[in-house]
Length: 113
Length: 110
Image 1 (cartoon, rainbow over the protein chains, first blue to last red):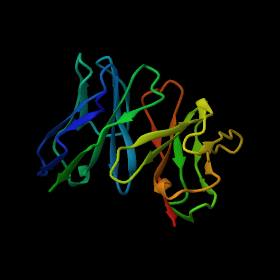
Image 2: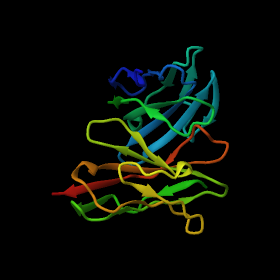
Image 3: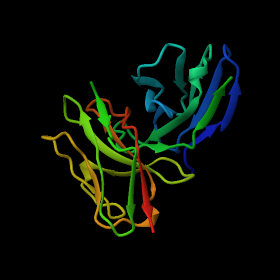
């Protein structure tokens, strides 16, 4: 089975712009979670989608949003980018509603200048 | 508040020495605890979870609810164990949400 894929792998944006990141889960997985990883804050949960519905949300401003499509692929969007949004964004997929094992993608490295 | 604390940023041991990576958590209900590992240039992956009570690559971890700890142990460290280790918590009902500790880098010297 192919693993979780994320596109693009690297991205450079300017302050004020918006960005969309994509995540394709492992085939058959219905849950997708997103995390932000920074040297200072570590790994922080953004949100989780299951069967196209947002099931959990972390403590991030409304500029961070996401969605999930019927094929379980997910996108996250960050509007009005700030320098502090520079981070590695990881997505993880899980097979069922009981997400005891999450499979992580390689991440998208976002740099905001 | 839900929180996971890994007090050591770096743990350096010699090959063959015992290893204990510390993890303490704060959660008011019944959490699920995990250890994830990231080897150099690889993805973050699950090492073990407390609910399965299994040993993976010689590592074990016991959930101590009294001390709210979930320390990761291995009796004899190998060089290939060098990696970043993250302790994570998932609260009941928050199935897709993992709260991670800051991580501990384990360095096993030859």
